[in-house]
Amino acid sequence: MALRLSISSSHGPASSPAISTCRLAACGRFPALVGTSAASQKRSLTVMTGSEMRGVTAVRSSSLETTSVGAEAVTGQVTEVTKDTFWPIVKAAGDKVVVLDMYTQWCGPCKMMAPKFQEMSEKNLDVVFLKLDCNQDNKPLAKELGIKVVPTFKILKDGKVVKEVTGAKIDELAHAIETVK
Image (cartoon, rainbow, N blue to C red; front, side, top):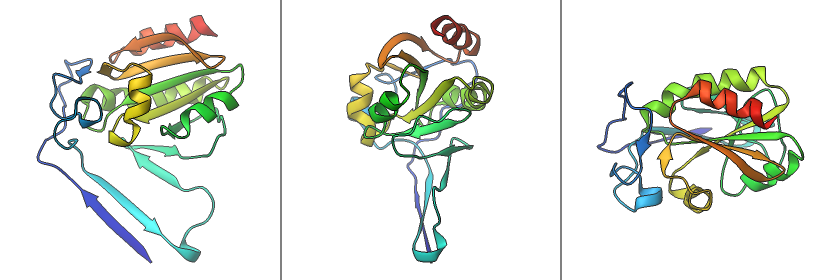
């Protein structure tokens, strides 16, 4: 048995390729940090019970496969995190470099960066790549990390933020990661 739930709002996704960041306060579609209307997104959730569910289930987000796991620092892929799983995974990463992609479902530049971020994770097997949907559920962590625009990439070493890259700047992100390694 599977239950499919769709949620949508009246806002369309931001899609201008000329925009490299989405300003949270300027865009009235970011309730997680500015307390306005519902986030512009259309999501589907499939709930499975009993014999239909086996092991870890892949989750489709931003048109890329990501895996939701407990407190395991996995390399070679992008792992979706929440306010509850982020710090345990960072701690589990030990002395490995951790790169966090802070994004929203409605952000055009975030969508453009997603496949490039995935490619980086597959090439940098000594780095842990994470992504955080800065929605209402993850508001406390987004505030704690000081997010002002999306996409924002936080690079952590030994559990501390050591570099930040804002905007859809893949070359700057690659350079920042190499610098921290």
